[in-house]
Image 1 (cartoon, helix red, strand yellow):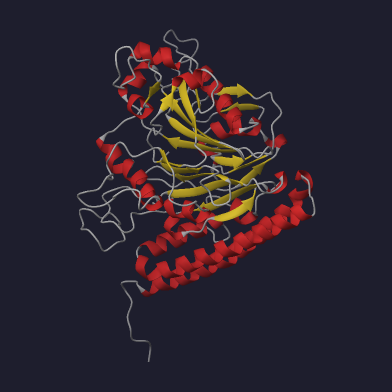
Image 2: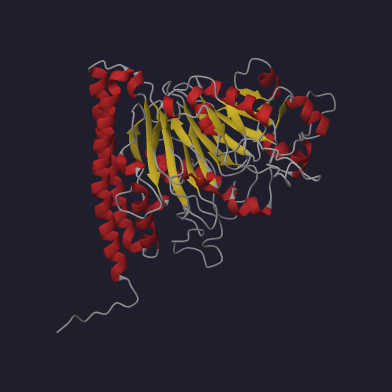
Length: 507
């Protein structure tokens, strides 16, 4: 699944929160309608079966309630994607990653092997289920994770035992830590703690660029990995680090060992990391021109870095909506030429399905700590809106998505706005920016007011749930009014730009 991720450590964020955020983008040639829901413990499957790989497992532990952003249509499985559980542990899964032939030869992916024939036939071959993938991971891990570290360990154990049929990156967070986990081949994995003062950019490539094996094998302060990672790497000659003959193979670059740097990456993936860091660290490097320190196709763009100032939720929205503004690569821009505009894959693309950003705030009580920000549709044309995660039901406007296009659905309304505004970008963008400002400022105020009220009243986790659900409904009602108003304006602008328009009226 083509996606883009940003992770922000607690000392790099504007309010001390940990923030994990990701666009979920549909594959080329299709759009996947999304909805938001709250999964209650009695709704969590006890025997789970994957649609894609036919993987099956008994889930014997007692689950927690958790938020989720599943596919609206169940034909390909749940694809829960992102959420927060009752312990205020958040998970985002997954960012599809690249790999190389050496890794996939050393530990092949675990794909479904279809059966052949009937059991009574001489050439009968039974079906062999595959491993787990993006479809499954949130459902299998988030309801049981007690911390971000615990989430990594739980998913790691599943990967080691059952394998995976794809390379993926997964984010876990709690109020103290963020961990980024990357699958390596069919059964191996690595994870690194995001430094508290840094942010991370991830554009569909295996991203971690430094890893300390001794820590992963020992105290696991900053790193975790499959227990046999070192021996597996040595056996298969995967470490590409140049070092003295007697120097221990402790610190290495996983991006070089396990990832890729293909022509496809240089068009589709790497430029997105360049664009994000260009926006968040504009003075730290020379980004443009013949003397640029970092260019869109460079393979050494850092995995994490310290920002020039503290980062906000508006920064999250900006970077996950980027279409190379201010560069010759902007498909809506006047700079460059036909050869450069549209050369690189934007972050804010037509196939954005949903953007979920989980903010875990350290300065409130447990009841109001977790806020899940949501946007649907193409990000340059939508708004990112906060909702409390400690609720029993998601707002109808975000939950009501099916295969019928309807303005009663936040998902479909945003899809309509994006499709209409794209062809009239310069004429519509002012109305869209005003909408984003109005919705964002109102939602910020409602969240702050409800947080103060719940904390002042000393509401416990269960007590606060109903109050926060009412707050979410209030935000959703405001959001629907403002989104409908924007659709009306964009529809008028697009209608006035139709090719069959004519200036003279009747009479």
